[in-house]
Structure formats: C-alpha cells, structure tokens
Image (tube, rainbow, N blue to C red):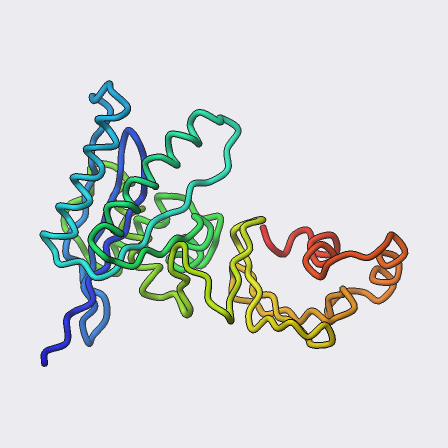
Length: 244
C-alpha cells in the first residue's frame, strides 16, 4: 500500500483578502505547490463572502488532495467588529476543512513568525524574505497575505507537537487565557509537579505549592500571603514578559 503524501494547506483568514499556501512534504523537505490570495473586497454581502471562502477552501482541498490544514488564529485588536468578521472567516475556513474530514491546526501569529524568521515580532516583509529564500518562487505574490498563508503551512511542518483544533487529550490541556501556553502531562495528584510550555518552546517546572521553580523565593512568599493562588496565576504575575 502506497502511503499518501502529506499536503499541508496554510490559511491566513480575512474577509477582504484571504491568503493561502500549499506545500507537499517530500523526503528532502517541504516543497511549494502554490499560493495565492482570495479577493473578497468587491463582495458586498457578508454572507456571500463567507460562502465564497467555504467554496474556495473546499476547492483547494479537493484539487490538491490536502491532508492537513494549518490556520492563523485571529489576533486580539481594539476593533471589536473587525475581530468578529475575522473570526467568522476563520470559522468558515475551519468548517470547510472539517467537512472534508481533515485535521485543523491553529497557530497564533507570533508562533508562526517565530518558526519562520526566529522572532515573534518579525514583519510581513521579513516572513516573505525567509520564505522566498527557502522556496525560491519566481514571482512576488500580489499581496503578502499569500506568504502569510504559506507561513502557516511551513510553521505546521516545523511544529514539534501540533495540537489539533478542538481536540483535548488526556495528557495535554490547552489554555485559552493567552493562546500561547499549555500544561503538559498534568495529573490529579496535588503533590506532583507540572510543566508549562511557552510559545517559544521553553519548558518551565511548576510545583504543587503554586510557585514557579525559576521564580524568586521572596516573591513566592509574598504572593502566598495574598491567599491561595493557582500555579498559572502565580506564574503570570511573576513572569509578565515570558508569555508575550
């Protein structure tokens, strides 16, 4: 039986421009299949925009025999309406993939930039430059939304332990507080240690006394006087810059 090739579709969701990129995983590494942008700005009706997104993503999945989908998570902004529209676009793209029985993996923008460029604060232009150097595509895409979609696919390929969208297994619990960290190997034993993995892959031990082992003991003592706190709350208070 011939093993089916891994084909990853990466999506940068949007209601005016939706970027996408496709890679196939060969023995030598990822190879570019294609990338592009779905233009939605001229479609006035919001419902028709979502319908067009669904049809386009479904067509890409069927046309390229996609096996996995990686999608960029909406970032938190001040404009609530924009956030709602972006969330709808992402949800429809996810629904299209799930309707085809495909696993979907979600990554925050900072994680994608970290995997591609090495810095979570990288610009779109830097992401483009790194991907251009890797795949050597001849024509520059119409907009950088295309390379953002491609970046999501490449990020998924390099991700050590991807977490499927909507799935929650016994050994890994996703924390939605910041979208950048999760507990691994958590048990019900209150005397056991826990690990916290940050977006950059750093593993931090948390003990049962609600203190981080890398934190200053004096800070731990001061926080304990305020009342019982969870491991997560204590860690966030004492390490405000670690999970940004």
